[in-house]
Image 1 (cartoon, protein in one colour):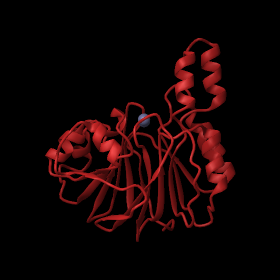
Image 2 (image 1 turned 60 degrees about the vertical axis):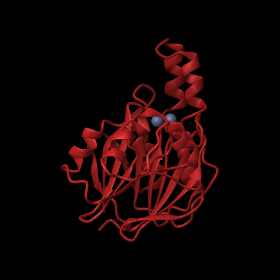
Image 3 (image 1 turned 135 degrees about the vertical axis):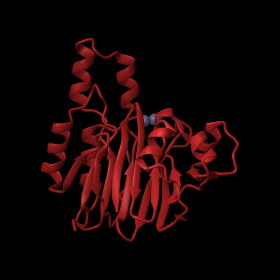
Image 4 (image 1 turned 30 degrees about the horizontal axis):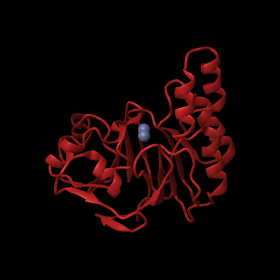
Length: 245
Ligand SMILES: [Zn+2]
Ligand SMILES: [Zn+2]
């Protein structure tokens, strides 16, 4: 299994988890054309799209996706917030496991400023157990037996405060970030709270353009965990299996 980052920022989020026969799309917050292009215009192996919440940077392409014949899954609150009626939109009960191709998926609640945001626990025989957390200022849960982690590391408190004092960033924007996105420190606390023994990759996503430092973030998480740590740069494509082989 591989993961491809189509985009990962407040400008748009979309990730493809795929092998030769199937592809799960996580978020569709980019132009549909970019998703189709990344799939070489072959949608036949797409088993579905899972979306965490209704902010545009996570669901921009939802209308075109369902029109193209692909099923979309999200929490009831998120689907309602799309303001779109379509038979390929599926409301998933938070905490209930469902299956898309070889993927077993379960959602859990996260902390963000929208209706019913969720994170996902995704299991596949090739990837093992993956946790996907984005747009959440905190995660109170721990997940046993993780093999791969995809988690937001949006900002560093230090950089954010410096930008405000320099007048580059405004106070109200700073406050919104604190109440809706995950800091590097909180991301590291989450990693510290979970058993990482069987973890192969840690993919850091949704870094803020202004308030992050990719090299520093990667190094700090690497120093703490000694795992394969990646930054979700646009176009990144890496093996995403339960073992490094
Ligand atoms: Zn976002
Ligand atoms: Zn959001």
